[in-house]
Every structure is written in structure tokens, then in C-alpha cells.
Image (cartoon, rainbow, N blue to C red; front, side):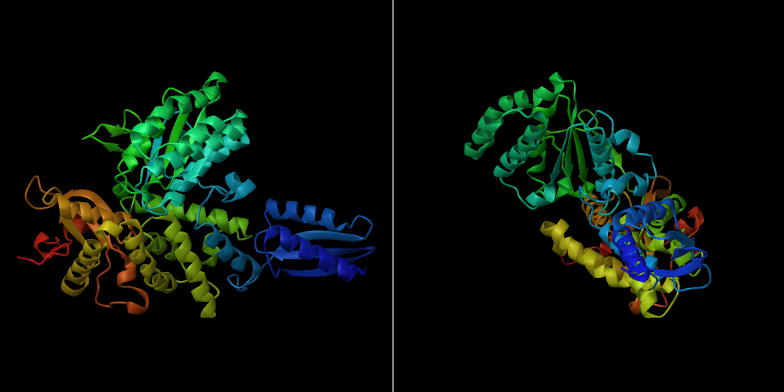
Length: 508
């Protein structure tokens, strides 16, 4: 094999291990040896380690060949370079978090939450992690999962998406079977009798409860070995709300006092952990503690720093020193935060889409307009989630969206408004559903306007409704410069008249 062929083989192996495709490289003759130079925007330690492994894999020890990596300089098109293309791929892969996200690189790529919830989630206690879609709920559960896997501690992971929409009692049986089967993998104890009893059990809650003492006794193996177990229930909100307290009541019955701790992720408005009428489920804070990850836009400075830190982690993994190397101006990341309403996953998706749009336009960097257009085009995804996440109230939510959009854009020419707290519980509950569906975003949780004692919540309409290709030039954007929110600006926002809200019913 010629030296040139060996260089190409080494580069190909480096690309395979790193994920980069189409990297720039060259060779330089140095006296009695040849230096293979790979050019990257930011050659971090990760890439030098990969190059070393690639060299071992292809076998260059008998050749006068020295591979190295150098930092690329000059004003080149980073978006269309190997690093930029790989970053788009990396961002896309992080949008659907599952047990295998990041793999062995998890801790090197994980960005801690704003409030430092990591300390809580690894504690021997029951937790319900709440937040909107994409707020980082599953990622926080994964932090606890990986912390335990690395220490070889028993953990059970149930992806509740498998049971999406179910409200039947057999759901309780199926989840218990899943728990016991996974527990058996750690204990090594025969679970055949318990599993057969569950599978053949009549589909009645009273009959299932008769088997719980045996399930509880089986799980007691771990406490007897002084080895606590974490049970992760990811996306718990996808099962029907009516069955949620019953399911949790049954699971908690076999876990409580057994060194088995629940770690649940859910969207708050779609979750009911306890039914007070029947005293069923788990109560907060007696039985479990809430961990809330969603800070909306009430702290835009912290949200911006958090989103930038996440993007920087992915950028460095792709060979880019910082995400701002891909931005036209310092305004891009703050605008991204407002357009994504502080939701990390939305920010990652929007930035990757903005990179693709900038590339199509022949730009070398992402602009604010690229972010705006991406927000406009991803709105349809959020609207579809009304049907998947809140199908039972979809018609009323869609009507409410139209009412608010007309009030803001057509009447007031503003993208934000105030709604009085405590006047109409039904309307407010629907408003909060739209918040958790990321169609409305909170900019202040409570502010006094006018008469003493009257409190209002400040909300902003999702940017997708009025930016990008459907831009309404006459709409006055709240906090256009993405600075810290001032109370005087909040008090100047229009108040949404409740008389304009129909919830699908004709106005009297």
C-alpha cells in the first residue's frame, strides 16, 4: 500500500470514529518522514485521542508517517465545513432523548440545569420532574441513570411512550410486569411465578392488588442487600390522566419502604399524581418531591446562559470552539432564547434549522432572520402536539389560540399581553395548557396592575405566529433587545379581556 493510500485510510478511520465527514487534510514532507495534517476549527483533546486510536487501528507504526491536528484559520465557511455539518447532525440526534442518548460520552456532553437539580435527582427519594416539552426532564433522569449505571447500581427504566393514551386496568399489569422483568435482571432471582400470576390475573384492580404483596416481597431482595433501586418512569403524562393516580398508587405500594425510589418525568398540566376523592396515588410533598425545570422567560439572562452552555457543549463535540463562532452578531443567541422561550430542545432544533437556512442562502454564519424564519416554520409541529398531548380538549385549545392571536396581532399589534389571575379558573387552566404546549410563554408569573390586589400573569405569543415568512411588520415585539424584563414595560402590556375568550362556545 502506498503512503498516499495509507493517509487516506487513516483519514477515513478518523472520520468514522469522530463522526466528521469530508474533513480538510494535507501532507507535509519533513526530512525523513511525512506529516499528515488534519485541519479542524477547534482541535480539542477528544480529537487527538480519536486520531491516536485511528492510527492504531490502521497500523502506521512501520511507516514514516506522523499524524497531527492543527487549528484552521481564516474566514472560511464554518457552516458548510465538516464541523458545521456534523453539528447539525448532533443537534438533530439530541431532539429525541432516550436511555441511550450520548452513550459513553454522556457526562462530557451533559449541561447542568439552571437550578442545580442534579443534586436532588440522585438522592434516595421519590421525585416528579415537571416542565414543558423539551425543558430537560428526560435528560435530568438520564443524569441519575448514568450516575447509577457507572457505579453498577440497579436501575429500572420504563419508557411510558409505549403505553401512550391507555386508560385500561391492564396497563397496571403491563407496567408491573416490566418492573419485575427488569428487576430480575439485577437480582438473578426466579420471577416466573410472579410474572405468570400477573399475566393470568383477571383485569380488575382488586385482583391485581392481591398479587402486590408477592411483588413487594420480590423487590425486598434489594433492600436486604442494602442496595437501593431507582425506577424511572419517563414521560408519565402520556398515559390517560384518569388512570395515572391508580397506576402510581399500585407502583408506590410495592416500592415504599423497600429501598425502591421513583423518578418520574411529566408535563404538569397533563399529569395527576393524586386523586383526593379516592385517596389514590402519591401526594406531594409527603410521598414525592416536585422538581420544576421550566423557568420560561421570567429569567431570560439565566435561560440564555443555559442554552448557550448546551450549544457550546455540542459545538465543542463537533470541533467548534463556541456556538458564537457560527453567529453573525451577539444578538443571535439572545433572540434564540426568546424565540425558543427558554426551552432547551426548541433552541437546539431552531438553531440547527437556522444553520440549514443560512447554508442555503450562502451565508457563513447564522443571522437573527434565520432564527425567525426557523421559528415560523416549526410552529406547525407545536400545533400538532395539541392533538397528541391534549386530544380531549384540542378543539377548545385551538379556539383559544385563535382568540388570543386575533387579540394580540390584529387588535393590539403586540406579541404579548396580561391576563388576570384568579378570575376564571377554567380559562386560566386552558391558558396554562397552551403554556405547557409552548404556544404561549410566561414572561412574569405575577405583577400588580391598577387596583391593589389584582394580579396578572404576563404572556408572550409564540414567535412562530408572526415572524419569518409570515412576518407581521406592524407587530410590536416585546423586549426586542432581549434584555432583562422591566416592570414598567410589563405594566404597559394590554390586558386580555375574558369576554373575548369563547373556549369553543358562542359569546353570549
